[in-house]
Length: 291
Figure 1 (spheres, rainbow, N blue to C red):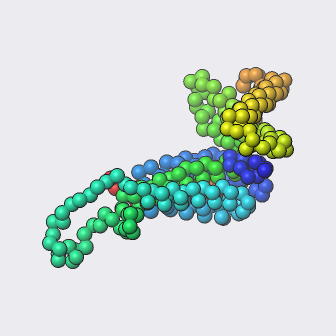
Figure 2: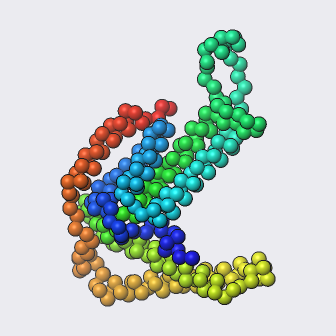
Figure 3: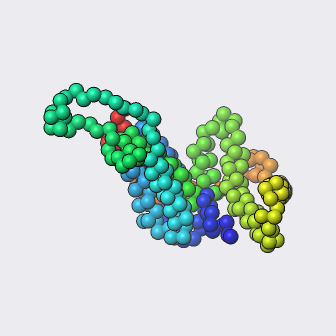
C-alpha cells in the first residue's frame, strides 16, 4: 500500500503543470475564499452551479485522471451517499393539515405538495430534498475547492501570498512571518507523516501477525505500540527539521530574511480577478436564498 499515491489529499502536484499552477497564489487564494463564502445563504441552483464549476475547472486544467479520480471521485461518492441518506431519513415533521379548498377545487388549483414521492415507508419531501442538496453540495464545495488549491499551489507560494495579504498586520507587531513559516512547515510535514505511517504498516504486514489468535485486547495493545512508535518517529523528524533550521540561521525574521516566492500578476491573473465582479453580481442577483 502506497499512501503517497492512494491518499494524495493535501499534497502538491508538481507534474504536469496546468494553467492553475501558473496563476498567482494571491489570485487563487481570492477565488478559494470566494468558493468558501459563496454557498452561504445561497439557493440550491447556485450551490449545484458551484459544484459544476469546480468539476469544469478540474477537467479544463487537465489534471491527471489518477489524481482527481481518487479525490473528486471519492468525495462525489460520499456526497451522493449523504444525499440519498438524507432523502431516506425522516425529516422530523408531522404535517396533518386540512385543505382550504374543496376536493374538486384542489385538483384544479394544484396546490403546493409537501410530499413529492412515496414508496412504502420511503417518503421524499421537499424539506429533505432541499436539505440533501444543501448539505451534500456544500460539503463538496468546501472540501474540494480547498483540496484543489493545495493540489495546484506549492507551500512556498501559499506562504508568499499569505504574507503579502497579512503584511499590514506587522504594524501591530504580530508575528506574521513566524506564523506563516509554521504553516509552511506543516504543509511540508504532511508527506513525512504519510511516509512514517506507510513504513509502520508495512513493518506490521511483513511480520504476518495472526490477528485472530491475538484477540481484541492484545491487538489493541499492538496498535497502541505502533501509535507510540509513530509519535516517536514524528517527534524525531520535527527535531531534525528544527536543528537544520537553527544551523541555517532561522532564528528571527530580522536576521534571516526569507524569500518565499516571487509574486507577479500576469494578464490571466487580472482576467480572473475581474471575473469576480460578474460572479458576485450574479450571486447577489440570482443566487440569494429566500428565507
